[in-house]
Image (tube, rainbow, N blue to C red; front, top):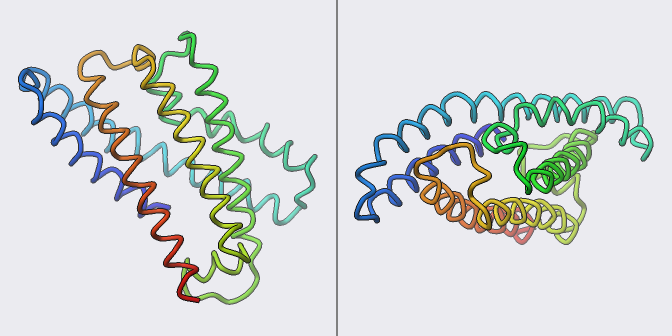
Length: 206
């Protein structure tokens, strides 16, 4: 998860650079957008994502140790989602009074639930495994099951990006919002392709 975060941050910087080279007047906002992205990626995004990973893993371990009934799962979600949301970039980079913020907040909660569901299955594996691929194959017995979990998260992320694309005034940042949103879309499409390819490699050769 940490490696995926680092890769996404680096790729995001490349996409921002590419988008800034396309517009005739982008040289005016280029220093501002780059400075914003560099500060955000090195501080808010990295620290927030690391915190989210820890919150999700701790909550998952609690479920593995104490039971995964629907009632207890819901209790864990309600207890931990506020902490997860507080360091979420959707929460920190959008206007909470915006008319569409409630939809983004709901998507963030669905993301946490999906992450927690997957992590709990991975943490429950008792067999000795050599790598992440084998861990996934043990936790998710079939490619179809793993693919459904992946599709669930991709659909949630797609929905979140579409909300922002439909009305970019929801973003706190003033200058360069269109550039950032275009880079966000391209980054998501690239990541989706990589995840699907990784899923195929994990299951198709076995």
